[in-house]
Image (cartoon, rainbow, N blue to C red; front, side):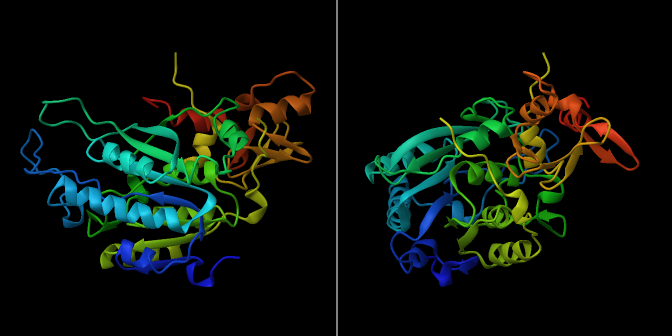
Length: 357
């Protein structure tokens, strides 16, 4: 039974202090985006001498590696204590901290399941030209221990990826555009994560009504995506400004209708763009109807990129093939969406993600 004090709540306070107040084995899933300890010493400038809006916040600054390691050990200890025995944890970081964090994860007896590379489609350039452009971040996914029966929605992730196994390299853009929170034209939070990233993580490793914790909530992305996907969220954020921005953002978030949150049950030249990417990036929303070319068949899009038509459920390709009684079918050309008074192939939506389109 879920503790009412943790249900869809965000807390303004120090992460470690607040974690100590939470009962053992409360959460099904934890996503943690801790300070990276970037160690930026000098101001970054572009070639035109304009200032780069880099991460130089006080919360990301530690006196030494030893201080950072102790901080990491303390919050991870508490996270392990409040994680259910069959729960799992995701931690994201950069080359500055992820190896140190990974060592502490193993020292505490977590069982690492994967390291996932978030390859950023639109990374910040390296203005000094003294090293490779840093175009990725690393996520560590671990269960509470090696015997944990953790959640992994394999079929949903496969469907999200056009019926191919989801690999541990994810190509997703950084947070920008309307999704980026701003105050008077300035970023509210310097390291706001994209909703598409959390959409994939929560679909992969949690189920409807699971309780999800983010101990470093920041701008509230984890809670926002959890609310959309029918998960129950709890977040902790120390900074008052971030806390208030997250609270406002969460209140303005509308959940996806419960009818469209079902996910598939588990069974064991041009860049390829899976249909699930359109759902993750908000180009086409769960609950939207798609049709056959003659508009006689009406299927519904689910949150994991699968579609439903009567008793048939699966990828755009599998459901179309079943309707036609064929071994295979190209769902991109078979399915259409309503655009004004006309039907257009969903492949047109995919083209928006192609380079130079």
